[in-house]
Image (cartoon, rainbow, N blue to C red; front, side, top):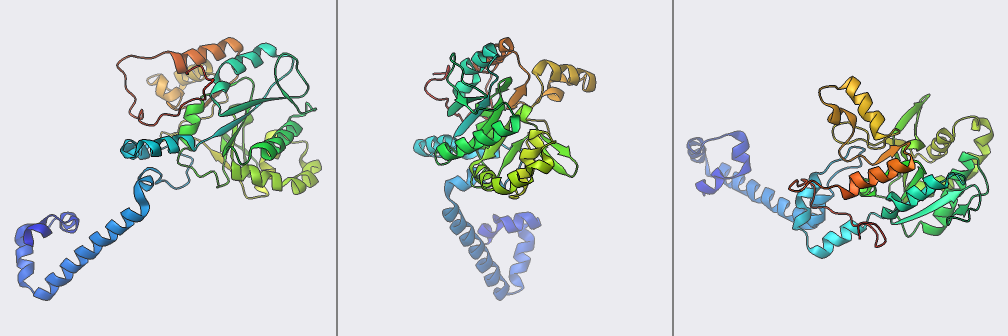
Length: 340
């Protein structure tokens, strides 16, 4: 019994030696009985909690947070294959991509590159375009485009997808990194995610870097429309991004700034070149770490050629012999993606 007690976490934490424990035993049998009973009770509770939580709790153990964390991956490989597949597929992203009818080359670049990695991507325009399949919103007003696109997404896909990405045609998105960020977040909670900026006392998401809504946030936005449209005349002079945030605020959905665990932005409102140049002036000794997050999700302001270069750098170029520590969790692209 003494040897067993020497191994308990309680005695380790108290840093008591076996010699002291022998002395303690002599102080009374009642104390020993109480101690043993306490240890048994503690072990029993821990065992019962583990049974109740199951293997999933070891993976999805974080509270809602805007910081990217990968600690759950350490247990991912221990799950059965069917459970791994189920978890990979539970993050389903519908991409709302706003395009400009006259910029067909830019539109084509998005269609040929990253958009194929969405679970479903659809292009929204102010008019019909013969060259590409588009959803005609019949307006060029940015706020009305956001409003109508969200209404259509809600009507058609609220039960099919659990995350909704709103993005412009000159923004490059790494969908797998987005899914990685969203993996431990519950879409039944009201998430409104991206690069958060200040407007007075309120925060809003800069659409240049992309806006991500959980299905619950989208539902709340749709149910806020009556009040939102009623007050639109008083805030219509503001940018569409700010108006969007105010509408969501009516339903207690607040902007969440997305960062990695080093405080670096995941949704970028600039291209990589500019971010590197900026880092060279602010972090000359550590340009790459000062520039961008390793798991960055978006870059904004890319030309069609830059889109294809990014596609090559992200999905085609490999360093043989280099293994990512987070490589156990893999989000497979749709069947028509270039990676298939």
